[in-house]
Length: 277
Picture 1: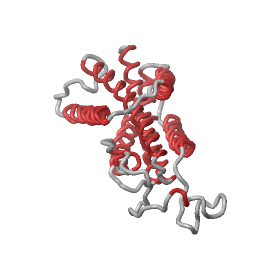
Picture 2: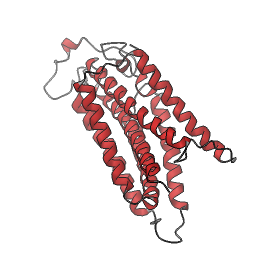
Picture 3: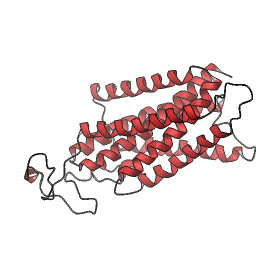
Picture 4: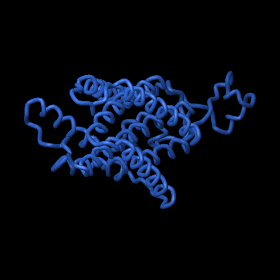
């Protein structure tokens, strides 16, 4: 079953097109029944055998990327000036915001369309998103005190509830569902970028605002984030079943990190919109 998600579509196993994992260069592994050859714990070194991706390895890699993201976000928060103080310029905060946002977007596109996952690039993405999240959170916290902890809590609840629903209700992702969500996500990002560019010419239609159409956009973005989490869980499950090499855990971690950042941003915007100016 082919995947339309660019994060996972570069990997055969995530899209369900094979059940035997392949080397990054394209060559096939030996039959899975032979994977036990070699000394215990050597990962098949010297035998051409690699460890397979597991749920545990995905959790470990995801924890690593999120730890780096949070660490950079915390450092950014500490370094940037307190915007709640009178007369403090927002220049450095906005610069960090833009560098993190566009730098992270660029690296994410490179990772998404590379066939071979590069763990170093995933960590660079996490660091840039940490810069972005730290600066954005600092700005929102100055405008609406207490909003950051509420957004973090809301993101955690959304993640936990979606995971519970996926497992307990045995949600199955169909090709049509996957295609619709992926197209909608690309369309949403396209609208964000278009409104951002038009804003430089005074022609913004309010998609990125916190009221009116912007409020509707935020709700749509939050719903899309939850649906993307469902896709992420499905892709990880398929990848594990397909017996992908352990290295692919980094691709899964990247996909989950992208979605969690998306959820946090939309949660932050939603709470800000509800609290008003």
